[in-house]
Image 1 (cartoon, rainbow over the protein chains, first blue to last red):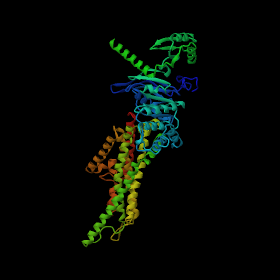
Image 2 (tube, helix red, strand yellow):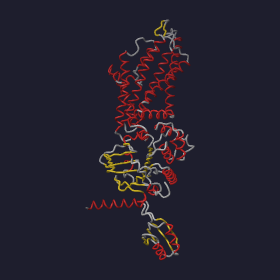
Image 3 (cartoon, each protein chain N blue to C red):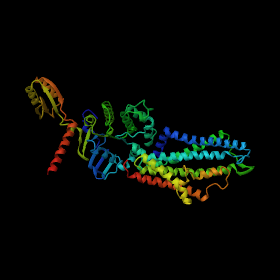
Image 4 (cartoon, rainbow over the protein chains, first blue to last red):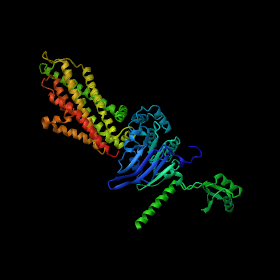
Length: 324
Length: 285
């Protein structure tokens, strides 16, 4: 990713075949409709978040996409192969489940050797590389059953990234981790993303995932209610929050910058939307005008706030539907 | 098929690295050795008692090692059959519970391939167990000075050593195939069970129940593969072999029963594996 590219630009659509595609997915458990016609498309190179509260259908959707559950209706393809024939993508897909699937009586090295053999190789160099990347280098002889949850998740990720698969699917990688564990996991995900691998991550930890994702879909009550690049969730680009000593001078400075500008006072600060002006130019204008600049920051809505707005919208729509 | 072989190789790596598996194999070798040792102690006690009462020396004068070997080997195989059931019963249900079954399905094999790969472990584990049980019994019998020559009683050769070896080979082949079928059966129960505990209970209970009732069924029992396996209520060719090794010339399964075991056991294994594949095909994993 070069400097001019925004996170939302990531995703190679040229090859035509998406990394993961879900079309009209319906999954019913008895009388419960867990997923109601979900559509998802993850392009290669994206870091895609499947976001939603507990019980919203994230894991069910991913399980169907990976062929672990049979959908009631709809189709799922992974790297162009139907989900039921995922094994044909041999070594090109890595999966990490919510509860790490490990041989707990075996050592870390033996776990990776097992997974390597499942892919048709002996592990060797790939195993060492994977352990280094997840920060478990030197722990090869420790038993998986004696690891902390964070280490278990890292070991599961090591198994998934052996051989550098094109697509890595992670189900709730942050669940159950302490703050340091979350931080370490996010750094690991950022590192994987920076290597250009396609990541599909399901999570209900929106605030933390914000730093990693390039695209996200929000799933509520089994329905995908929004799928968009992350920037679209985070608010309008070119928006800034400014605090100054002299509000009038600030207004004059803002009015003088290039292009269309909107400015409004909000909670003792000035909210400025100037999509055509750079942050540098806007700050320079404020200094030049003698506004007494105290605080200058890019204004972002945040994924959590954006998500809450979607939930509120949905509740309102449901209430309106109920009233009607 | 390549998916199944990948799973087989991975499962071999797994079992070779498993302490429980080595402990199981050690037990399968140790129990025959203990059985041989206990038999020799009992034999010597009887001899002393007989000598004290002024009796002669009845029984075999040469080749008495064969009976010890077969008794020990048979004890090992009985334990091995139970361990095979345990291994196979947890193979699918246990791996589904821990999520390990997903690793194969999302990496290298279809669902059926993952089942077949585990089923192919059956012959491998069974062979290892048969060899370890035989090795344990042979080592113990040899160490305690057992004689593996012709079976001789009162200077009369009942069976030559070659005939005993042939009969033993025949009994072992029947038992080996039946044990593989038991492994397949365990896998089938495992594929239909909700969890490993239920799978283990279900498969063990079925085999034990069969043991209880099989004698009542007369010759009909030979139509069920489990009758040919060395279970705790052993009625297999190995039991007959134990009598044969003591010089009883009427011992040994009739040819028809033996052949039925040779045909039935592989068929039962194949059928079990097919049914297990079908059972796993639509299940959530």
